[in-house]
Image (cartoon, rainbow, N blue to C red):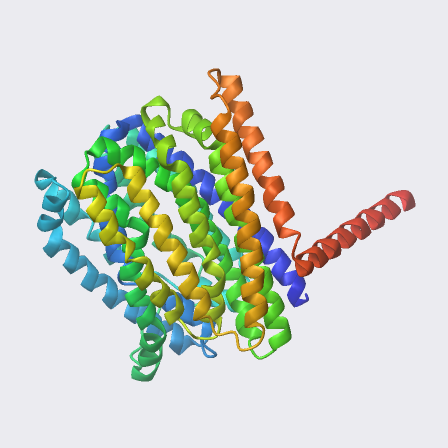
Length: 494
């Protein structure tokens, strides 16, 4: 099978799996939120924030180095990654146990220290993760990764439903978080071909640390960027506000996380293989940029047009205050998606400090958000601070991206895409602002369908402005037509 066919097949498998994962995650969140209400959802969110802090601030990218490094497929490299992952899990579990009390006090939940201590199980279990399925991505074999994503999510969805029969408060979220971790670690071992082993190799460990240290620092910054606003709201606002804000945040972040994962899995091997072929590398970089801009436009237009309908149908009237921030949060996430392109281009060349440096500048918006929150401003202002930070981070990321050939063309393409997408998003926002909100279920469903359809059309048109993407679409269409003709001829022969 050719590399192109492998990529197309891998993209299809991963896209289908990530759509299913997104649906499972959304349904799970809906089950939890509707069952326990906005205030208990806010309390449960503090546990999720705590474990996210620990995981994101300890990201050495031990899995990514197995894809990027020339010797990443060796048994020694895999076993070394397993050992480092285990020690990391033990250390993080101890940190969580020791800091449970101050974290509970920070969120004004001193009576729930035991819940924060229980979260120590999550990094401890993650320390036993098997990375063999990551290594198989080097051969563009993405089926194990797809199964690893799908199976735990499906089982966690079932577990959330069963747990809702037992708990009607924050304990439901605690149970789901721990069960999801157990299922994910189990799936990584079940899907592995090679045995789970450890090995002590100082040279390999140094190489992993050299690759991962910028990402480790970046993890601290990413937590502040991804979760900083919710930490501020959890500390300075009531838990009801945290609950509906978290619903809007999760809805907007879900497609971002899916797209980021797909981009890293699909584009990293391709760009890494062709980093010495400047012409091909430039074309792939342009396609990555166009894909990011198109997906960002899809998010902004989709949530602006269909966000209120989605909230009404999924979470119900108790969470409708989230409509006041969902548009702002979608813009923030769209800018973050656009920043994926220069970051992954840099990572493919071993320059993992790109995201770290950009996120340093992005984090400057957090003190501003704290100031506005303590001064009594609304959560909408806090979300707007995130947009300003993302704009600065995008500019920095592009400036430091190592494109020795075609940097000017890349920047020009970025400005064109950004201007076009911004114009379309502003027009959609103005039109949506004048529209009346439907009051019937049928009207809400129609708003959801029209909004999603309009967003898809606009994003597709923006994507087709890339010549390489148009050529790939024509190639796919030719192959599809050829397959239809062959099938028709085979039918006539019989």
